[in-house]
Structures are given as structure tokens and as C-alpha cells.
Image 1 (cartoon, one colour):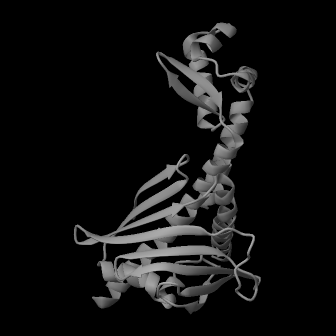
Image 2 (cartoon, one colour):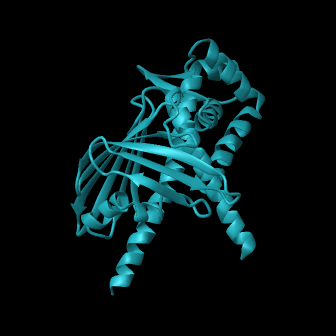
Image 3 (tube, chains in turn green, purple):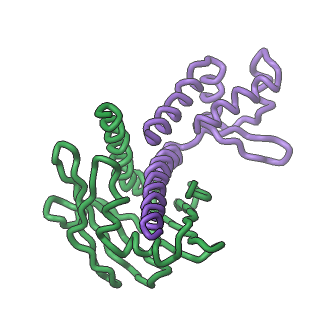
Length: 161
Length: 115
């Protein structure tokens, strides 16, 4: 298993995930830095993600969408707050409309990604922080949707097989 | 199916917790003030251990939380905001566990290609 630990802090409104990969830091960095690689893990099976824009620089923007089996597109955006290759990234993430513009009244979540060498492999630490439980809930609606979509996608695969 | 399982599990736990009249009464009392486990135990014709078990079921369902006050454990209902946050974090966990798994598979695949 890759996930080493998960810490959910309800009072501090943070979520910290630590994962260990059997690959060099540069390789794991590439999974975030290369949009073609990102596309292979961001969306759940059956809901491929397409990254149309991926400007890996401080202040740089990312625009992507995920396509449902019915062809429906769900758009999202990121903004890189800081970029320190190949060790650290800070990203604001949120929903977008069909043109890829951030939806103003939907708050964004912030995630800090840190990569470090550990035992010949790479440790990845993700830390999400939120302003309020309500904001957390709003942001999570997306995760929920993606998660459920994944389940549905896997069910489809099972049925097809 | 991880998200489904988590959500179903959480829902099952809440329903299970609320299916018992004693637990519903404990929940009601804990909402009025924060009684200690021993004070709750005095209210029901059952052992302290049995009441403790009921409180534990409510606690697992995220409906009450125990708070240590001196030698006693006070039982409080968990506010809606905290329940909301807990649920949101459970979803976030499921989403990212799956993503990390896919990242790991991708890295393994790349390594395999190099050989």
C-alpha cells in the first residue's frame, strides 16, 4: 500500500496524507508536472481528465475537465501559488464553468504537496487546509462526485467484463 | 467502491445507533447538558458497563463525543458543523486514497517499461 498515514484534524480543519512510493523524487514530481501523466491518475476509471492548460510556474494556471461516459464535462481549475521543483508545490483548486472560468461563489481549497527522498523511494505529503467546515463540505462535493463516479465507472467495467 | 462503502458504513452506524431507545434517550440527555457516564448510568436499569457500551456506539457513529473532566467522562452531542467536517474528510480520504493508488500503479508501469 502506498498510503502510509492519514491525519484528519477536525478542529484545525486540515487533512494530511502521507504516501510512500518506490520511485525517485523526480519521477513522482513528473506525475504533477507533466499534464499527460496527470491525466492518467487524476480522474477515476471511466472519467478521464483532460488538462487543456498547465502552466507550471508561480501564479500559473491549470484548466482541466473530466468527461463522463455520457460525454458530460466537469471543469476545474488550479492556480500554482508556489513551485519549487522537484520538491514542493502549493496549489489552489476549485470548480470552473464550461469556459474554464473559476466559479466565483465557490470557494477554493489549498493543498501543499511536498516530496522528499526516503529509503531510496519518495515520500509525498499532501496537506489540505480549509477556512470552515462549510467550505470543506463545498469543496468535498467535488471529491464526492469524483469518488462516486469512480465507483460507477468500476461497476461499468465489471458489468462489461 | 471505496466511497460507497465509507458512506454506507457511516450511514449504517448512525441508523444502528439510533435504533435503540436507550441510546436515543442518551442522545437527548446529552443534548440538554453534558451528563457524565455515571450520571447516565443512574438513569437506566442497567449496569454502568452496559451504559458505557451504548455511549460507545453513539460515539462511533459520530453523534456524541466524550470529554474528560477530572475523574469523569462527560458526554456531549457533536455539533452539526463537526459532523459535516468529518463526513467531508472521509470523502476526501477516499478520493485521495484512490488517486495515490493510481499514481503508484503509474510509477510501477514506468519502472516496468525501463527494464
